[in-house]
Image 1 (cartoon, rainbow, N blue to C red):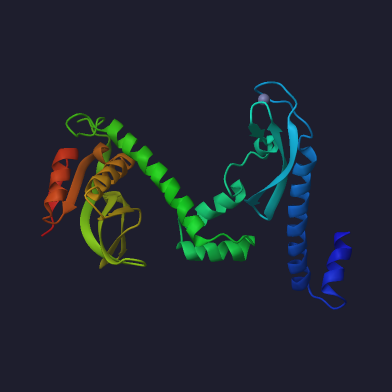
Image 2 (spheres, rainbow, N blue to C red):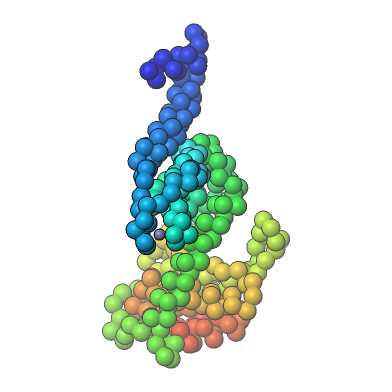
Length: 285
Ligand SMILES: [Zn+2]
């Protein structure tokens, strides 16, 4: 049946690229129709009120739009209890998707949205998945998840720090026989929407991960950068939390020689002395 349909679309003369494109369009249509059909078929035809038990009136259909690998428009029956004055749409629960996008689409939005600019993510989704999602929706979803992660991190940091601000599990019996470096600095970066902005940056790595590329050059081949924009009076706290978390994940305090390198900015040494008092401080003047 599909073979016939594709031939009907592409005509008598065609190549593989034309066939592939037509089949993709056709399959997308099949996906939409089959999905909508499945849910319409399993919708409840009559029901009783959960509260009072009386028979509910069928008030016809309402539609619900969900963006997935196709633009679904699912019609669902709406029931009304005249006694209680309440509505119910049983299919809603069966569909099991409270948002505007299916899981497949959400995963793609997050995967691309955290790696490339939102506009490009939107373009790539259209190009690769044939799904059109606005860059605003991608931004909203990614930033929402970012906020959740950041809240979880704040809790995690709070659990790692004792009342004096020290990392809890730091002991004198150090395990890793190497030097770990934590470097902190402020910098300016050019942003897409707001021009030049101040940002706090950190990098963390171990001495053993330094590699001699040639006799004049060394490279740190394993390192982690992290940064927080200096937007308001909460930014420094956010950056300190980020640094503590990165240091903890890296196991900074488990190295025989933990070293903090920074310029003369007071916040760096205030943070170093409070949160990593055991670390060697090197002033890079
Ligand atoms: Zn009722």
